[in-house]
Length: 173
Image (cartoon, rainbow, N blue to C red; front, side):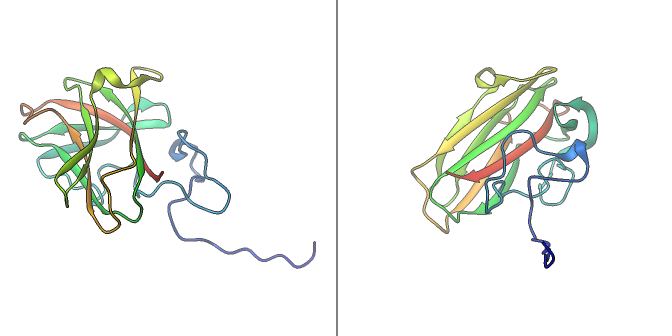
């Protein structure tokens, strides 16, 4: 081997230099990045609209290093918007209950249809009180639809309730 070139590929790749930021949920397949979300461990980033939420980064130890604390400053649910590029998705999130037992929803804003929902008791126990939630939707999505990922509580939660989020992942299929 005497003629090798390296190219930096843009995007949110599954391998990161900081061990505390490495995803543990999925493995990146050959030829592509799996996680279609950015800032998946940084919920204080502007990519995650936080109207009526107070985010405390790296507030508690978690399976991947540290988790962000999300406390509602007013009754509200947190959401993330994206445009559908495929017709089926799997949404995974790792969280820990505090004074709020969160729910997680995958919602099609174009059709007004809730595609998947999991509440706290449906999560799979991981470590240190964290649970993993995996939701899939393989129907009810058309390329170009306005999609939302919600997390929060059923209805409008009481001000001051909180929970922790460690990691979120959205992938095709």
